[in-house]
Image (cartoon, rainbow, N blue to C red; front, side, top):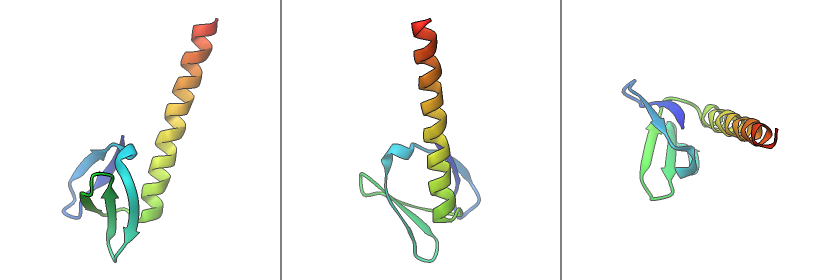
Length: 71
């Protein structure tokens, strides 16, 4: 999950798998796969970076688990 900030300044966590698209209109608008929309303080590039960082961290965890399982 990625940590984001609402326009009111409240922090929340979003399952990145649910992100369908990200637009800047002028705020960052995240459309989820179920059609719900969220406006956040982060820029679209920041959201994408957070998603990439999270996915990399999950990939590293799976690699470690796989390595430990084979030793």
